Length: 157
Image 1 (cartoon, helix red, strand yellow):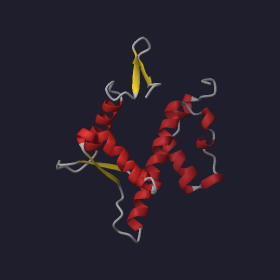
Image 2 (cartoon, rainbow, N blue to C red; image 1 turned 180 degrees about the horizontal axis):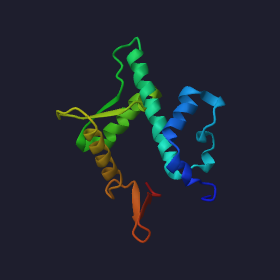
Image 3 (cartoon, rainbow, N blue to C red; image 1 turned 90 degrees about the horizontal axis):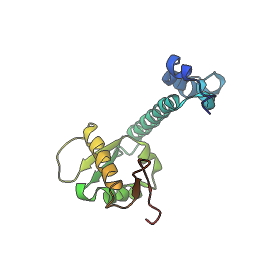
């Protein structure tokens, strides 16, 4: 597959601007490298995915602000207990499953019983704790293959 990828595009083309031109400004009639994903390497696809998610998050946040229901937050706010982080997180996801656009908003995390405003640090800490717990042998979701140095889902979990 690497024969089809063109890393020059990633190096020479402003893919964020290309995405904006294609999907936000000019539409289907203009040329865009975004229309030919088979030539884009992994780095280029990552750039476009991040751009698309920022665009979707911005739209969801703006829709919330313009909503007649002013109580809607421009963020997806969750409150979790550190010692029950996985269970609380799943409960928060289940609570929002009827409102899928809510899950596309930027995430803001609060830990129960702790003061602090999430400016990115709490969200980062949330994901660090979640990954640590999910990959813990005690949690039992993954196994680790020493020889190949990778984690994989446990077949019996």
